Image 1 (cartoon, rainbow, N blue to C red):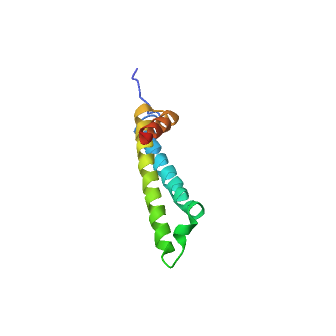
Image 2 (cartoon, rainbow, N blue to C red):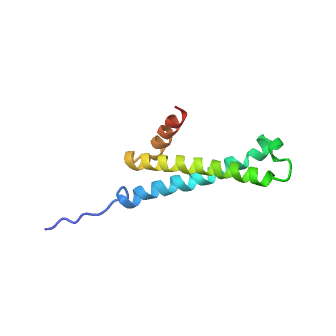
Image 3 (cartoon, helix red, strand yellow):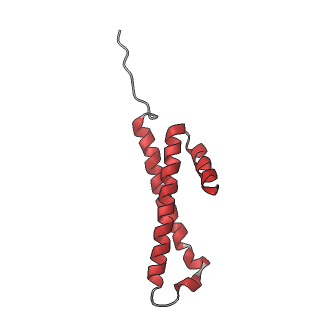
Length: 95
């Protein structure tokens, strides 16, 4: 009698999903973070070039969110634990 191995979700397919989830959430939260600049610093957005300022802030926040998402997803992939990975990534970002 032969044994057949079945792949579980923890194999390569599931681990890539964690990185994609981290990227997606990081990008979306980064855009939202950048858009809050309209409320927290409205004095920056006076004059004819306010759109360029907002675009720069949103792009920077999105990049920061994507980077944090990739780090969180990679840690979750290695540890196979998404909540533990996000707390670990937050503690590394603070130091």
